[in-house]
Image (cartoon, rainbow, N blue to C red; front, side, top):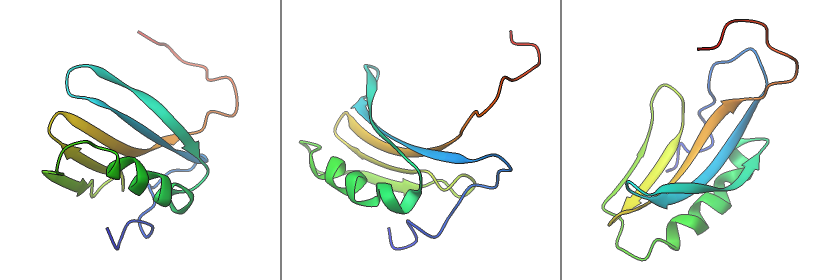
Length: 93
């Protein structure tokens, strides 16, 4: 996780980092929304430490810079999401 804070998603709009946790096939909950990946680093590590099982996998998505940790059936993710600052016009399906 040394490259944790070095990757930023390519985007023209502001980005927030959403920290979430949950169980496989059970959904999850948002733990926090951060203005930068660096600001979320400590909370991500703390949330990963709370997984009650040994971590069996941890990875970073090359394209988005999102980071994930998984142990047993529990997971923690930190993912970038564009911040919507104005009404979006277009079709939604």
